[in-house]
Image 1 (tube, rainbow, N blue to C red):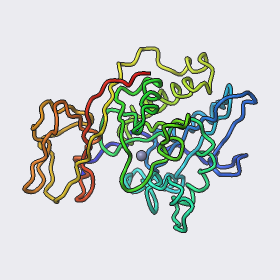
Image 2 (cartoon, rainbow, N blue to C red):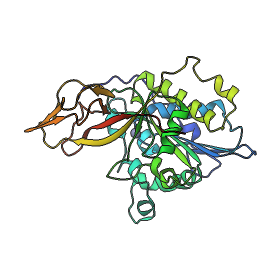
Image 3 (cartoon, rainbow, N blue to C red):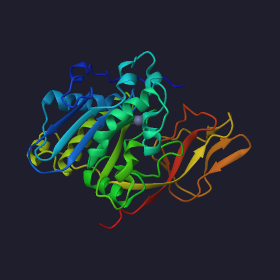
Image 4 (spheres, rainbow, N blue to C red):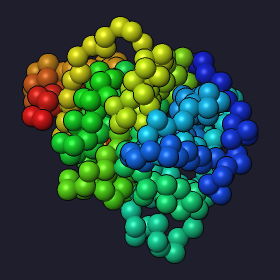
Length: 320
Ligand SMILES: [Zn+2]
């Protein structure tokens, strides 16, 4: 595995443990004015430091909602509290992926794990949220991406927030439901909406900036903060135009010999249908269409039986 520099330091969040909500590390603030319940969540995965930095900073700044309700939370604190720069990959989760348990059957079911216990604590807040931003980062270096789910309402939400450049629309994962897709967030008839931002590689300096900028643009868009307050935090320069990529398939490594045809970066575009993307034993994996986008490839972390990259097609912004 390629060594990746740990440029970010995990913040000490102990000061945020006690909370009037009764749930450790989950803080809810009421404005006393009508408005949506807005939630910003960090460390769904314990080694995703940029989100912890952003939420810690919001709490230390004393950010309060201008209208409606604001919940600021740290999700997988058991995994996060064990983050060790010497073993940074080890603390994604303790027992299971926190972001694969978000359906009523699993949450109401008899199974137990560190992550399920925490998800059951967070559930009332997630269920109360009209708008959710879940802040993540990635295993391998890649430009940041906004994961908006399969629905047009999620895609529009990502365009409304305005960053990052790349918007990835996908169906989620076969092995469990994400918080982003839970209940109304995944229902086209519900006005509730959620985004998952992947701010860059887990420990790269730039991820902290992306997390902060995305959070403030999100808070401004949903009306949780006054525009003037947000303007003090949001970078002045206009962001580049966004690009919508719809995931069409996952490429699963079938053999231990799986290797990429060349050193692809994240969100790289393979120009021609039939161009070789990877070799997998006797099989050749080719681009299924022109301008095929490689979504979050994991060239240094390929595991047989697991997704090595997802493929996506560039699409036009859906009509409003
Ligand atoms: Zn994550």
